[in-house]
Length: 309
Image (cartoon, rainbow, N blue to C red):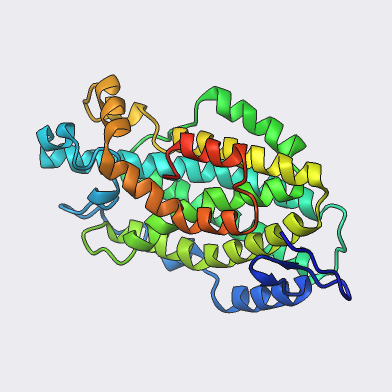
């Protein structure tokens, strides 16, 4: 990694970093033009559409497994409804963590800066997204799916001790894989209109969040002390493992009448599922590799998560 310091300019393997205030100013301008109120933008009173999926079948965890081939079409569509609820529940959990990390990030910074203004704007976005996801779960009639208690409580530790680069690395992990899936979902006319609307809003607004997190993580991986960079590599790798584990709650399988242990085993053995998850993570892992986050133990943890080949 090469660091160049001249008039407070920073450079990494991807080139010269943009001025933090200028980046935030552009993101604020974009937010003013392309922000949505899901309560008004989406038709929540429209009935659920017969014969439409709640998630594209190719993105479901059991797709193309022996168990999938034995399932009826109705059972497959029910699985989609429950997996969509599981992903939305995971998204809410993650966004609540993210909001707290962003508040910590700006606590000591200039309250009138564009950087802080944009962070507050993003927090407002995430509040709306969490409410939108909750409303989508309720609309589909599926239960909420909480992450296992051990990870729920580990997140309390993360929120307390996370370093700034660690916070932004975790942010990208939670946002970019789901974003990849949602970009395939909102144009898919096989999918419920309400789900397509939810994913469209999330994709548009998350594009700004990803830009903000990428720029700040690049800056931190150049300017942070060595111990903090090493801790970021370790925590990011462990977060990848936890995220992959929690991606679909196994209770989903029981709730659609499947044997839980058999379903989990077939998901783990599925080459299609592995390809989907690695494709969803590929843009992120390439970026993290470029800026030096994937070194050493971090790469091994990412591989053990199944998100990296």
